[in-house]
Image 1 (cartoon, rainbow, N blue to C red):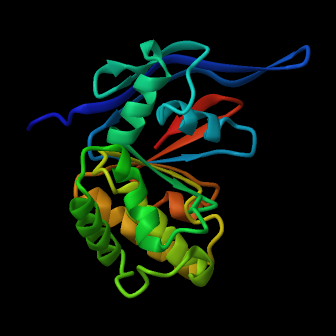
Image 2: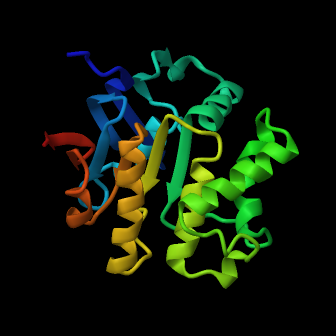
Length: 228
């Protein structure tokens, strides 16, 4: 049986923040391997280091100590331009607060990330429309975020995360601002993407949602407490 390729690896990763005279040890000595096609949920109490882990995995921040590999490349050795390039091509982000641009339509929000890659205008429009159809919003393409429900806005955010066909989807509390029924719909979309070989890393405080993942990583005080 062929072994799945390792897509993300953390080796003895630490992240410290300086707050006045105090040192906040947000992540302490984390080792983690994520294989291509995995669906991982990161859970833990407030202050456990979940969001910091997400920022490190997503190349939004660099470790204080240790190494982080994405597709075999050590991102700790990259400058900001290199990190931005990796984020644009390999990682799609879904945020709890959607982070949609209020003055752009659903379609314009989805195609925005493609403007920084090598897509023509026609390709951007075609792909943007196709992605919105995939999340069931073909009739809401020209609506502004303020004209959409919370669930619809999160589906726009998912479509936007897929714009550049990334290998990894990072979802930070993707159901946090949604009712339970809508949250389950969002999780079903993530599960469908995972079946299409997307690697999903989800931070959540909702244990019921976390159970939908293939593996659950429990963090406490910046350290991995258990992996199930």
